[in-house]
Image (tube, rainbow over all chains, first blue to last red; front, side, top):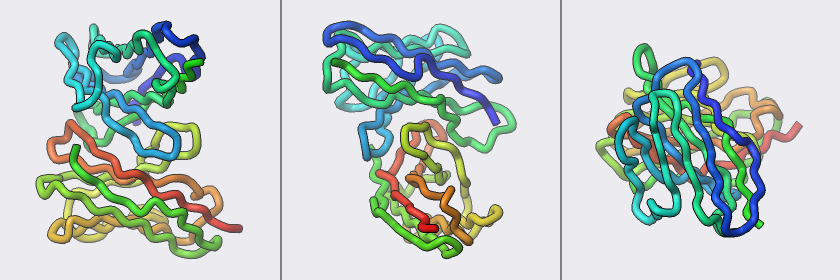
Amino acid sequence: GAVVSQHPSWVICKSGTSVKIECRSLDFQATTMFWYRQFPKQSLMLMATSNEGSKATYEQGVEKDKFLINHASLTLSTLTVTSAHPEDSSFYICSAIPGQGNTGELFFGEGSRLTVL
Amino acid sequence: QKEVEQNSGPLSVPEGAIASLNCTYSDRGSQSFFWYRQYSGKSPELIMFIYSNGDKEDGRFTAQLNKASQYVSLLIRDSQPSDSATYLCAVTATGNQFYFGTGTSLTVIP
C-alpha cells in the first residue's frame, strides 16, 4: 500500500508557541491531503482539505488563522498550530488518497500527538 | 458534516466467537464505505472497503452493505485477542471527503 509519513510523532510545547507538523507521501504524488484531529475516545474529525498549490478548504468551525495549512508540493503538506493552547492538545493525523490503481481508500500517516502545557 | 453513527460499545466477545459491528449513515449519496481498525495511540488502518450492496468477504472479515437502509456492517469470524481495537466506519460520497463514525471499541476475551 501507499505510504504516508508524518513528523513529529510526539510534540510537547508551551502555551503560546507554534508547532509545525509535516505530512509526506513517500511513494506517490498527492494533489490532495486531509488533516484530521482526534480527541481521546472520539472519532476522527476532518479539519481541512489541503490542496497542492492552492488554499486549503477548512471544515466549519475550524479556525483557518489558527491552523495554517501549506501544500507546497505534491508530496508535502504542513499543518502549523499557531499560538497553541492546552485545548489544542490532540492527536493530529494526515491522510491522502493515491491516484492511479487505487481502491479509493485513505492512507493515513502515523499521527502526531500534540501536548500543550 | 454528514452523520455516521456507530454503537460506541464497548463490545466484548469471547475468543473464537463472531463479532458484529454496525454503522448507519445519513447521506444517501454515499458511494464508498470503509472499515478501519485503530489501536490505541495509533492511526487507523484499513480492514475492508465495499461499494456494492451485499456481502464482501476477505478472510475472517465480512462487510455487508444495504444502501436502501443506509447500513453497513462488519463481521469478524473466529475473533482473536489481537482483534481488540476500535473499529471505525467511514463513508464518502465524492471520494474526496471521508466522514467517520465515532468508532466501536471491541474487546476479544481470551
